[in-house]
Length: 114
Length: 113
Image (cartoon, rainbow over all chains, first blue to last red; front, side, top):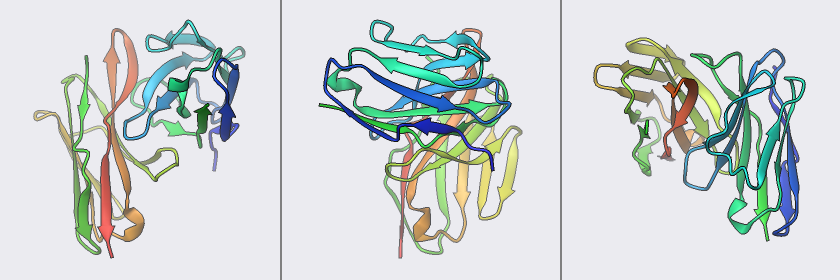
């Protein structure tokens, strides 16, 4: 069964350091999403790609976060510099398209900033 | 701002009972609705999708949609302790020309053995 792949699964970093997360969506899925989830809350969308283009990054803190999906397949989310408040689960998800398709999540990356 | 509301719980039900989880949404134009199960420390897992008014059944799970009342529910029959998790409701909705998935905060379900 096809799955969304993410790495690393866990990351501990010191504040002010740089950190990067990688995601490989299900083959053929044109839409890729990065979410942040804080304990006790639902996933919050950070950035949404359609193929290689960003279609929404309104909630992405652009002073420190960046995301890319250069060839429209896998994607990288970067934080530089990391802050204590960035500690959360970072989830990648993909779907065939933006409208009315089922969305599937990867296993997530648990980030702890010390 | 478009919203999805869920009771945070916990909802406690005895083993073998029916668990009923509810969700309301604010955007009347929403067309697709999803239920995810999330175990502690894990990522959300898709359980059900529903697009039309009425009921949709898959095994022990039934999703119910009422677009007029802007209400989605998930019924879990013959609840098992392994069903203990947080259940997230998600709505695919148009936000300023982009379709996004808006999630509720989730309802924590406890199935008591």
